Length: 184
Length: 184
DNA sequence: CTTGACCTGTGTCTTGGACACAGGTGTAAG
DNA sequence: CTTACACCTGTGTCCAAGACACAGGTCAAG
Ligand SMILES: [Zn+2]
Ligand SMILES: [Zn+2]
Ligand SMILES: [Zn+2]
Ligand SMILES: [Zn+2]
Image 1: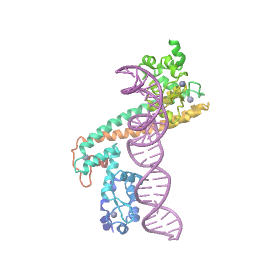
Image 2: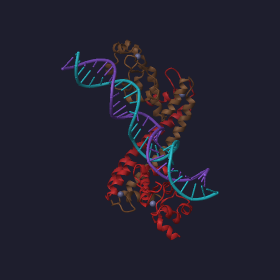
Image 3: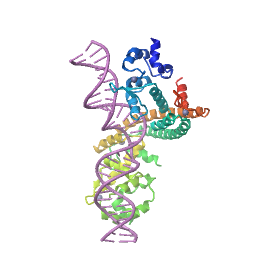
Image 4: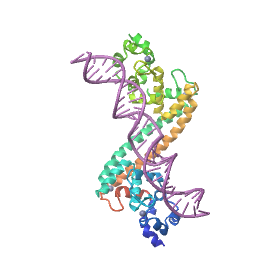
């Protein structure tokens, strides 16, 4: 039984360590991945969208999104039109999620995958892109930090001030007086 | 001359100190804001979109955007259909920009303005909203910080690693090995 | 047979504007 | 006067990375 399981789903072996958000594996194997059942609907060891999503801890919409933009190219069961995700799709999606965690944009990832699909090393592209994205992230970080400080300062100052009704040229004295101070 | 200028445009007096991105004021006054010319096209001291934008250091598109979503409600010159921005619109837009600088969303600002327009003090709303936004900004800051650290760590580790061609189950060893390590 | 869970593709929504486009207006120079 | 050019109008679309909705098809269990 274990043998026939790994027969049709051997691409899953060794992945457990890498997927910490994936729980209840045995149950899922028991319910959805019993080899007999899998064989019934699909012989090549492929899975449907929701199972693919669950294995990588994302939503089905995310899997559909990457399918829609053609990063994933699952087969199609001619009988019912259902998508069939293979080991290759699984590896691709896992890669995509890893890259997203490192701040690559989806477009970056498409570029990287283009290289890999042409058997060329994507590494130089990866190094170039992460350098760009790192600079952007640092700028973003500085901006967010400044914004937070401004907000904290405002909350602090406002704690000493009363509420006021709006006047002809002052819509909210809290906001406008704070901004006026800042400009000094 | 100075007198007649302040006659039709007195709402601008005292604003110079607050607009640091506004340059070449005298020229603009000379060219576009000569009282005689202003009187010719519009008697109430109102200005057109591009001038409004320039005074507050934003683009005309920004002014049009806030007009579109009805935060600004300029009049309309019946002769040519041009928008006419008044002192009130100027104050509103200045307020909006100040609030944006403090991290309020446009929707927040609409809510704040609703209070002010009904002569009610927007201050309680302002205090409540900035508290929310501050929490969000802090979360954002933590996330961005974590992302930056991850990216820096990746760049550091990758500097010791060679480029490699993709294999059957490894699209880019840099990204996938880094992510695998992270999970330990 | 029905129910409910799942699947499909497609379209729309999110933010805060930026940009494009088609057509009207105002003014200065040739 | 004409022409060029800068400005104006409203409207529609675009951005990122999915999330959500909808109409309709599929499948297994009770
Ligand atoms: Zn199949
Ligand atoms: Zn690589
Ligand atoms: Zn007017
Ligand atoms: Zn207030």
